[in-house]
Image 1: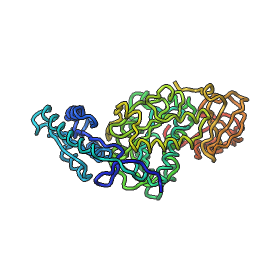
Image 2 (image 1 turned 90 degrees about the vertical axis):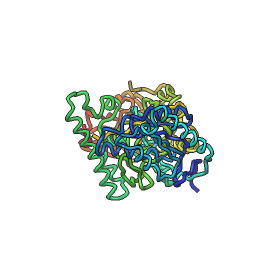
Image 3 (image 1 turned 135 degrees about the vertical axis):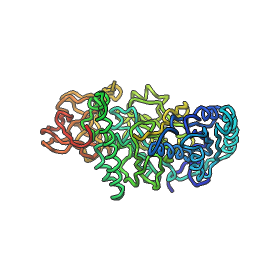
Image 4 (image 1 turned 120 degrees about the vertical axis):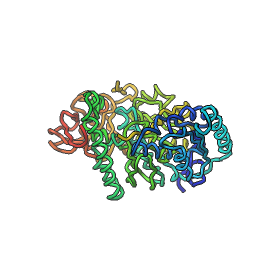
Length: 389
Length: 104
């Protein structure tokens, strides 16, 4: 018998670690209405964003798939879609994208309701009813194979690649070893290691996918650097990286990759999509913290594990973010924001294995309802949909 | 600012080896030339190495004599190769290591 946690089994079999109602606008024009509906019904979260119209092609498609993915995330027992009525990404398409999950789902459209005040009232009634129904759901014992964690690091320093990321990698390996899923991304932080990642692919198709997506990311960065007229906008590896002891891009990228442990990659999938396999996965996404965690939540990750050396307080609406630092001073300074102190390895007081086990136990505790510090403090600034260049 | 010195908290001069295949250790405190440093392996195995140069927190030193063009291994992977030979306990950084992979 493997490890278990206490989660919410949804209608479609998916498992949530939270039981919230999400208010999602299809377009920025409905952002304030979504926010006000959420303010009226405590326990709901809203996903205000600046996109959903005046976009075309892949850029609009990524916005659409990401918002649908967020709505499908099993941490949400129900969703209220808020639309304007004339936007390119229609509220109906968002609604229809979420509907197959079978979860509670309603839609309010400002131009149909009459005005924003009426839309807020209608949406508030919808959310109130959903929230009350959701409150009757109970947690049940669930195998860890139903968990999907997302990996992202930000505000990194020397201790990140040294202890925080390797310790998280051990926790990731333990989860994957029991049939769960773990998602690596931040391709901009993996450049120069594609040959190593490809070696960790489960088959040739996945190896080719790894080389393709990292190659494309490198081309995109080269294009951006070449077309920039400001020389201060061209650095990929910073002076601080070299001062901190990193001697090559490969060394920096390996430190980032270590979050994913030593497991084999079973699938590479696109931003806005959900994986079709379980195990260690690679999400094709860039390096911005918020864009990565948003892609992870849209893929169905119920929890995000976030190593940070310098310390960042940020969190994500409805998806708990667990902060881990390898820097003992950062932990002392930012105890109110950081959940795990991997800095004890730097001080010679713990081994990587011991801290890896502590992270794994914290993942199970948070999955069972323990709130992470970012969650308690209401940090939700990581919701940010990536744009296609 | 990066925190370079945890010696006052650690109560000793330590270095970490991240993978059994590695031929470098990473200093967990600032080290001075001639310092004897306690190297801790991933497995928990510990031994002493004397460093031949000043090594800052987070920087690497060789766990064995290295030849020119020999691979430098950290995290169990090659992070670069030596531009010149180096003795055990010597500092490895951009001045004596090269790598042609990844964007600069």
